Amino acid sequence: MTLSDDKITELFCQVDTFCAHFHNALAPHLLGNPPKKKPKLCVSEVITLMILFHHSGYRTMKGFYKEYVKVHMQHLFPNTVSYNRYVELMAAANLPLAMFVKTCCMGCSTGISFMDSTPLRVCKNKRISRNKVFKGVAALGKSTIGYFFGFKLHLVVNDKGELLNFMLTPGNVDDRQPLKDPAFIKAFTGKLYADKGYISAQLTQALFCDGIHLVTQIRNNMKNCLMELKDKILLRKRSIIETINDELKNMCQIEHSRHRSVANFLSNLLAGLAAYSFFPKKPAIKYQPVQTNQLSLI
Image 1 (cartoon, rainbow, N blue to C red):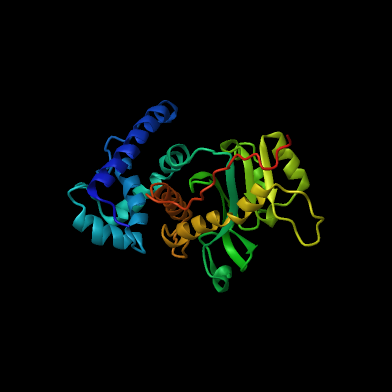
Image 2: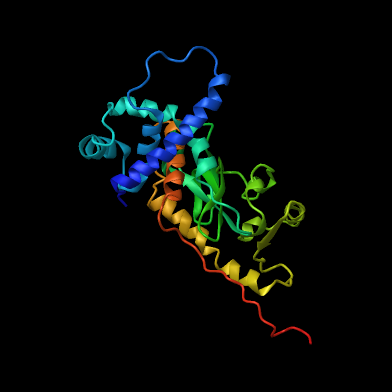
Protein backbone atom coordinates (compact mmCIF):
# COMPACT_ATOMS: atom_id res chain seq x y z
CA MET A 1 0.00 0.00 0.00
CA THR A 2 2.21 2.83 -1.29
CA LEU A 3 1.17 6.40 -0.49
CA SER A 4 1.47 9.25 -2.97
CA ASP A 5 3.73 12.24 -2.36
CA ASP A 6 0.72 14.38 -1.44
CA LYS A 7 -0.45 11.85 1.16
CA ILE A 8 3.06 11.60 2.61
CA THR A 9 3.24 15.39 2.85
CA GLU A 10 -0.16 15.49 4.53
CA LEU A 11 0.94 12.82 7.01
CA PHE A 12 4.15 14.71 7.79
CA CYS A 13 2.24 17.95 8.38
CA GLN A 14 -0.03 16.24 10.92
CA VAL A 15 2.94 14.69 12.73
CA ASP A 16 4.96 17.92 12.63
CA THR A 17 2.08 19.99 14.02
CA PHE A 18 1.66 17.56 16.90
CA CYS A 19 5.42 17.44 17.62
CA ALA A 20 5.59 21.24 17.76
CA HIS A 21 2.83 21.37 20.41
CA PHE A 22 4.33 18.39 22.25
CA HIS A 23 7.81 19.90 22.54
CA ASN A 24 6.42 23.28 23.61
CA ALA A 25 4.48 21.58 26.42
CA LEU A 26 7.42 19.36 27.41
CA ALA A 27 10.22 21.97 27.31
CA PRO A 28 9.45 23.65 30.71
CA HIS A 29 9.67 20.28 32.48
CA LEU A 30 13.00 19.10 31.03
CA LEU A 31 16.11 18.99 33.22
CA GLY A 32 19.49 20.29 32.05
CA ASN A 33 20.35 22.17 28.89
CA PRO A 34 19.09 21.11 25.46
CA PRO A 35 21.69 19.62 23.06
CA LYS A 36 23.60 22.26 21.09
CA LYS A 37 23.61 20.27 17.86
CA LYS A 38 20.26 19.04 16.58
CA PRO A 39 20.09 15.83 14.51
CA LYS A 40 19.87 16.18 10.74
CA LEU A 41 16.65 14.15 10.71
CA CYS A 42 14.05 15.79 12.94
CA VAL A 43 11.62 13.86 15.15
CA SER A 44 8.71 14.55 12.79
CA GLU A 45 10.59 12.97 9.87
CA VAL A 46 11.59 9.97 11.98
CA ILE A 47 7.99 9.29 13.05
CA THR A 48 6.71 9.79 9.50
CA LEU A 49 9.19 7.23 8.15
CA MET A 50 8.26 4.77 10.90
CA ILE A 51 4.60 5.01 9.89
CA LEU A 52 5.39 4.82 6.16
CA PHE A 53 7.29 1.57 6.70
CA HIS A 54 4.05 -0.18 7.67
CA HIS A 55 2.42 1.08 4.46
CA SER A 56 5.30 0.02 2.23
CA GLY A 57 5.01 -3.77 2.22
CA TYR A 58 8.69 -4.25 3.18
CA ARG A 59 9.39 -6.95 5.74
CA THR A 60 12.30 -5.19 7.46
CA MET A 61 12.95 -1.57 8.36
CA LYS A 62 16.55 -1.89 7.18
CA GLY A 63 15.50 -2.87 3.67
CA PHE A 64 12.85 -0.13 3.55
CA TYR A 65 15.24 2.58 4.71
CA LYS A 66 18.26 1.62 2.60
CA GLU A 67 16.55 0.42 -0.57
CA TYR A 68 13.54 2.73 -0.76
CA VAL A 69 13.92 5.85 1.40
CA LYS A 70 17.55 6.64 0.52
CA VAL A 71 16.98 5.84 -3.17
CA HIS A 72 13.45 6.88 -4.11
CA MET A 73 12.45 9.39 -1.41
CA GLN A 74 15.38 11.81 -1.38
CA HIS A 75 13.16 14.58 -2.75
CA LEU A 76 10.92 14.27 0.33
CA PHE A 77 13.59 13.50 2.95
CA PRO A 78 16.85 15.12 1.76
CA ASN A 79 18.62 14.98 5.15
CA THR A 80 18.73 11.23 5.62
CA VAL A 81 21.29 9.75 7.99
CA SER A 82 22.94 6.35 8.20
CA TYR A 83 20.77 3.41 9.19
CA ASN A 84 22.57 2.93 12.54
CA ARG A 85 21.92 6.57 13.42
CA TYR A 86 18.30 6.23 12.32
CA VAL A 87 17.80 3.29 14.72
CA GLU A 88 19.03 5.52 17.57
CA LEU A 89 16.61 8.27 16.54
CA MET A 90 13.75 5.77 16.43
CA ALA A 91 14.28 4.82 20.07
CA ALA A 92 14.38 8.51 21.06
CA ALA A 93 11.07 9.13 19.25
CA ASN A 94 9.08 6.54 21.21
CA LEU A 95 7.61 9.04 23.68
CA PRO A 96 6.25 11.55 21.12
CA LEU A 97 5.07 8.65 18.93
CA ALA A 98 3.13 7.12 21.84
CA MET A 99 1.50 10.47 22.58
CA PHE A 100 0.70 10.97 18.89
CA VAL A 101 -1.04 7.59 18.73
CA LYS A 102 -3.05 8.24 21.90
CA THR A 103 -4.14 11.78 21.00
CA CYS A 104 -4.38 11.87 17.19
CA CYS A 105 -4.97 8.27 16.01
CA MET A 106 -7.89 7.19 18.19
CA GLY A 107 -11.50 7.32 16.98
CA CYS A 108 -14.66 8.51 18.73
CA SER A 109 -17.08 6.34 20.68
CA THR A 110 -20.31 5.58 18.80
CA GLY A 111 -22.04 3.63 21.56
CA ILE A 112 -21.15 0.30 19.91
CA SER A 113 -17.72 -1.09 20.80
CA PHE A 114 -15.94 -4.42 20.42
CA MET A 115 -13.06 -5.68 22.57
CA ASP A 116 -10.60 -8.52 22.18
CA SER A 117 -6.99 -9.41 22.94
CA THR A 118 -4.41 -10.88 20.61
CA PRO A 119 -1.04 -12.48 21.48
CA LEU A 120 2.19 -10.86 20.31
CA ARG A 121 4.91 -13.52 20.23
CA VAL A 122 8.48 -12.30 20.57
CA CYS A 123 10.08 -15.67 19.79
CA LYS A 124 9.20 -19.23 18.92
CA ASN A 125 8.33 -21.59 21.76
CA LYS A 126 11.46 -23.69 21.38
CA ARG A 127 13.62 -20.56 21.93
CA ILE A 128 11.88 -19.30 25.07
CA SER A 129 14.65 -20.42 27.40
CA ARG A 130 17.31 -18.73 25.25
CA ASN A 131 15.54 -15.38 24.83
CA LYS A 132 17.48 -12.63 26.65
CA VAL A 133 16.02 -9.48 25.09
CA PHE A 134 12.63 -9.79 26.80
CA LYS A 135 13.73 -11.63 29.93
CA GLY A 136 11.79 -10.26 32.88
CA VAL A 137 9.50 -8.21 30.60
CA ALA A 138 7.51 -10.70 28.52
CA ALA A 139 5.72 -13.68 30.05
CA LEU A 140 4.42 -17.09 29.08
CA GLY A 141 0.72 -17.00 28.26
CA LYS A 142 -1.96 -19.12 26.69
CA SER A 143 -4.29 -18.27 23.81
CA THR A 144 -6.88 -20.22 21.87
CA ILE A 145 -4.17 -21.74 19.67
CA GLY A 146 -1.75 -22.71 22.43
CA TYR A 147 1.03 -21.33 24.61
CA PHE A 148 3.18 -18.37 23.59
CA PHE A 149 5.93 -16.17 25.03
CA GLY A 150 5.38 -12.45 24.68
CA PHE A 151 2.67 -9.90 25.29
CA LYS A 152 -1.06 -9.38 24.91
CA LEU A 153 -2.46 -6.46 22.96
CA HIS A 154 -5.90 -5.48 24.24
CA LEU A 155 -7.91 -3.51 21.67
CA VAL A 156 -11.23 -1.69 21.74
CA VAL A 157 -12.73 -0.61 18.40
CA ASN A 158 -16.02 0.94 17.31
CA ASP A 159 -18.40 -0.21 14.57
CA LYS A 160 -16.50 1.93 12.02
CA GLY A 161 -13.27 -0.02 12.56
CA GLU A 162 -11.54 2.86 14.38
CA LEU A 163 -9.32 2.21 17.39
CA LEU A 164 -10.73 3.60 20.63
CA ASN A 165 -8.08 2.44 23.08
CA PHE A 166 -5.37 -0.17 23.53
CA MET A 167 -3.24 -1.62 26.29
CA LEU A 168 -0.12 -3.80 26.21
CA THR A 169 0.31 -6.35 29.01
CA PRO A 170 2.50 -9.42 29.61
CA GLY A 171 1.16 -12.64 28.15
CA ASN A 172 -0.02 -14.06 31.50
CA VAL A 173 -2.41 -11.18 32.31
CA ASP A 174 -6.14 -11.93 32.29
CA ASP A 175 -8.15 -10.47 29.41
CA ARG A 176 -10.52 -8.71 31.82
CA GLN A 177 -7.77 -6.84 33.67
CA PRO A 178 -7.70 -3.71 31.40
CA LEU A 179 -11.44 -3.17 31.99
CA LYS A 180 -10.68 -2.66 35.69
CA ASP A 181 -8.54 0.38 34.87
CA PRO A 182 -10.59 3.62 35.06
CA ALA A 183 -8.27 5.39 32.60
CA PHE A 184 -8.75 2.65 30.01
CA ILE A 185 -12.57 2.66 29.98
CA LYS A 186 -12.87 6.45 29.66
CA ALA A 187 -12.50 6.20 25.88
CA PHE A 188 -15.83 4.46 25.23
CA THR A 189 -19.41 4.23 26.51
CA GLY A 190 -22.56 2.29 25.62
CA LYS A 191 -22.56 -1.36 24.56
CA LEU A 192 -19.29 -3.32 24.69
CA TYR A 193 -19.33 -6.71 22.91
CA ALA A 194 -16.74 -9.33 23.82
CA ASP A 195 -16.19 -13.09 23.79
CA LYS A 196 -16.64 -15.63 26.58
CA GLY A 197 -13.27 -14.78 28.11
CA TYR A 198 -14.75 -11.56 29.52
CA ILE A 199 -17.63 -13.19 31.43
CA SER A 200 -17.75 -11.84 34.97
CA ALA A 201 -20.82 -10.79 36.93
CA GLN A 202 -18.82 -8.51 39.22
CA LEU A 203 -17.08 -6.80 36.28
CA THR A 204 -20.38 -6.37 34.42
CA GLN A 205 -21.92 -4.59 37.41
CA ALA A 206 -18.87 -2.34 37.87
CA LEU A 207 -18.83 -1.36 34.19
CA PHE A 208 -22.60 -0.70 34.22
CA CYS A 209 -22.06 1.90 36.95
CA ASP A 210 -19.58 3.62 34.61
CA GLY A 211 -22.03 3.73 31.71
CA ILE A 212 -20.80 0.62 29.88
CA HIS A 213 -23.02 -2.39 29.19
CA LEU A 214 -20.84 -5.48 28.74
CA VAL A 215 -22.49 -8.02 26.42
CA THR A 216 -20.91 -11.47 26.05
CA GLN A 217 -21.91 -14.89 24.85
CA ILE A 218 -22.82 -17.48 27.48
CA ARG A 219 -21.03 -20.73 28.20
CA ASN A 220 -22.69 -24.10 27.72
CA ASN A 221 -22.97 -24.70 31.47
CA MET A 222 -24.65 -21.34 32.15
CA LYS A 223 -28.34 -20.62 32.40
CA ASN A 224 -29.99 -18.96 29.44
CA CYS A 225 -30.74 -15.28 29.85
CA LEU A 226 -32.91 -12.88 27.92
CA MET A 227 -31.03 -10.83 25.35
CA GLU A 228 -32.23 -8.21 22.91
CA LEU A 229 -32.28 -9.22 19.27
CA LYS A 230 -29.92 -6.42 18.26
CA ASP A 231 -27.40 -7.62 20.85
CA LYS A 232 -27.51 -11.14 19.39
CA ILE A 233 -26.95 -9.72 15.90
CA LEU A 234 -24.05 -7.49 16.97
CA LEU A 235 -22.40 -10.37 18.84
CA ARG A 236 -22.20 -12.15 15.49
CA LYS A 237 -20.50 -9.06 14.05
CA ARG A 238 -17.66 -9.38 16.55
CA SER A 239 -15.51 -10.69 13.71
CA ILE A 240 -14.73 -7.05 12.90
CA ILE A 241 -12.11 -6.92 15.64
CA GLU A 242 -10.67 -10.27 14.53
CA THR A 243 -10.23 -8.76 11.06
CA ILE A 244 -8.50 -5.71 12.56
CA ASN A 245 -6.12 -7.95 14.53
CA ASP A 246 -5.35 -9.81 11.32
CA GLU A 247 -4.59 -6.58 9.44
CA LEU A 248 -2.38 -5.33 12.25
CA LYS A 249 -0.34 -8.54 12.22
CA ASN A 250 -0.16 -9.25 8.48
CA MET A 251 -0.27 -5.78 6.90
CA CYS A 252 1.18 -3.58 9.66
CA GLN A 253 3.53 -6.35 10.88
CA ILE A 254 3.27 -5.59 14.58
CA GLU A 255 4.30 -9.18 15.39
CA HIS A 256 7.65 -10.71 14.47
CA SER A 257 10.61 -12.33 16.24
CA ARG A 258 13.45 -10.14 14.97
CA HIS A 259 13.50 -7.54 17.76
CA ARG A 260 16.88 -6.73 19.29
CA SER A 261 15.61 -4.50 22.10
CA VAL A 262 12.41 -3.65 23.96
CA ALA A 263 12.54 -0.10 22.55
CA ASN A 264 12.54 -1.50 19.02
CA PHE A 265 9.53 -3.67 19.85
CA LEU A 266 7.60 -0.65 21.17
CA SER A 267 8.56 1.47 18.15
CA ASN A 268 7.28 -1.19 15.77
CA LEU A 269 4.02 -1.66 17.70
CA LEU A 270 3.21 2.05 18.05
CA ALA A 271 4.06 2.80 14.42
CA GLY A 272 1.89 -0.12 13.29
CA LEU A 273 -1.10 1.19 15.26
CA ALA A 274 -0.57 4.67 13.84
CA ALA A 275 -0.29 3.28 10.30
CA TYR A 276 -3.57 1.41 10.68
CA SER A 277 -5.37 4.61 11.69
CA PHE A 278 -4.35 6.14 8.33
CA PHE A 279 -5.71 3.26 6.25
CA PRO A 280 -8.17 4.68 3.71
CA LYS A 281 -10.54 1.73 4.19
CA LYS A 282 -11.11 -0.05 7.49
CA PRO A 283 -13.30 -3.03 8.41
CA ALA A 284 -16.74 -1.74 9.39
CA ILE A 285 -20.27 -2.98 9.94
CA LYS A 286 -23.47 -1.42 8.66
CA TYR A 287 -25.83 -0.98 11.56
CA GLN A 288 -28.92 1.18 11.30
CA PRO A 289 -31.94 0.47 13.52
CA VAL A 290 -35.35 0.68 11.86
CA GLN A 291 -38.29 2.09 13.77
CA THR A 292 -41.50 0.12 13.20
CA ASN A 293 -44.88 -0.17 14.90
CA GLN A 294 -45.21 -3.86 14.29
CA LEU A 295 -45.17 -4.85 17.97
CA SER A 296 -46.68 -1.71 19.46
CA LEU A 297 -49.88 -1.88 21.47
CA ILE A 298 -52.82 0.21 20.25
